[in-house]
Length: 318
Image (tube, rainbow, N blue to C red; front, side, top):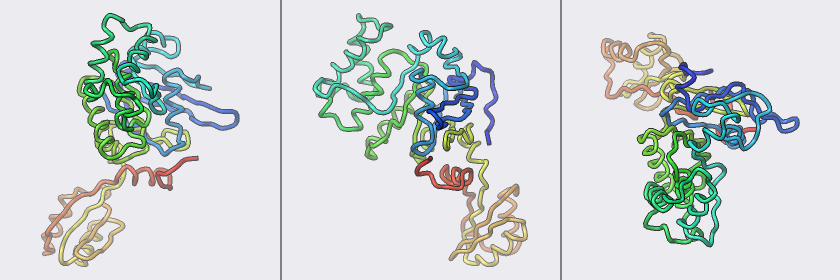
């Protein structure tokens, strides 16, 4: 199942065709057609072991695909890697810095190995990146004294030492406490507001729902669905929720209208809408004299969608 992802090739910051990776007899990524629109915050979702990191490593040229091809920012990889990768910032499999050096000193070392970086602007760019992630005041603190959330933000600062059109962040909130997760989430939102395309992989569905405009769902190496988040969620069946002190009568009306999976609770009747317009349910209830103190339409969560696509929970793949 794939939501609407139509567009010209240049409309996509990331585009893959049949991207596949085998390790001996194991297929880790199986014919993935990933389309990340320019300017999107794309949530690359899947349980641990579903193939997200392997896909990202192929996108960045860290490993070669067994089959398929892909483009970053409209340029073919790996042929145009030298042109496109300076425009791409990434965080893959967690931050790695020297613990005995300060945050600033770590970024200086990182900047020195970038052949595209201008050494005359190193200090200004490093301070700008640290300020962007909220770490300028802690720039001279040793990395080993940083909290996990600060370490993740420092890694993102490293990806921001030069202007980037595309940011690829692999599990940027992994292991963070709620405050650290909020900090990274807000940072991702601000990067997108400045015009960057952000591809963020995660197994935390609730976080993705709060920040992403588009999603793609991986399971056992396959891309199950992708598209604008509301469009993907709309594929799941919506349920009408009627709050009333006469739920039996409300349930009778719901069944008459053709709603399925009608269920009763104390003061509540629910049913799957199908193609029926929600306003018709309210009209029918009122016409039948059923008192309605509350009415809402509930869309399935991303986890509900994943379960409906795979028949299993969102804990681990493979």
